[in-house]
Amino acid sequence: MCSKFKMSMMGKISFFLGLQISQSPKGIFINQSKYALESLKKYGFESCDPVDTPMVEKSKLDEDKEGKAVDPSHYRGMIGTLLYLTASRPDLQFAICMCARYQARPTEKHLHVVKRIFRYLRGTVHRDLWYSKDSSVALTAFADADHAGCQDTRRSTS
Image (cartoon, rainbow, N blue to C red):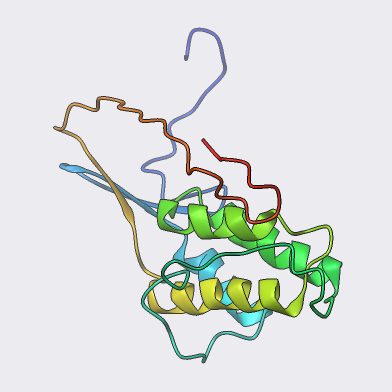
């Protein structure tokens, strides 16, 4: 890259685009604990009781047409904050994407699920991604449908 762009080596990288990076001879740790702690404080979850999972087991989110509506801007802000964390937290991805489906008209039910994700984050703030130097990375992908997983349209997600 040095032949194409003007570059300078400033030492080991430790922070980049909100990602905290720790390098060792065996690999790289990536986390976003600083951003996660700031997010918890921003939304008032810095002293909440943590939970073990981001969603309740077998929870079924639906449109909740009869539910009491909440402020969509606040809800979208919470979703956006959590989505940024998925760069280093794939364990949050599924739950956040389920909640993101209902940004047009979020209800108290949807907000309750988002708050649970924040409570899960509170207990797992320092979780890292580890990329080992010696492991041969092989991308393996699987595709499947969830057999009418959307409670509103009965469409499958694959």
